[in-house]
Image (cartoon, rainbow, N blue to C red; front, top):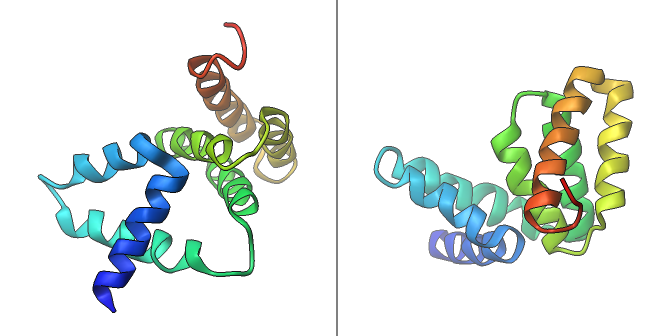
Length: 128
């Protein structure tokens, strides 16, 4: 069972985050390999495998949560990329972040928007 969780989690991580997700996992191997394993198994091997939401919705919800936290720009960057990778449009991501201004405040929404802008710029979706 444990190998299945890891294998399925790694497959899902690659589907959503591609190289960005792998970089996070690889960067943990020398200091906290167990944390890398837990990230693969629990969120991606268990939660992302559940049938209740499609990947687009899961990534939009994740963008909302990370924006609301207000201090997770590296993780938000990975998940904005992930949202784009699973078919979300930049305009949808922008709307989710604007919505967070109501519930998390303008500073959190601004941090989120600047992170999204960075990703969109890197991917050639907007001009600087």
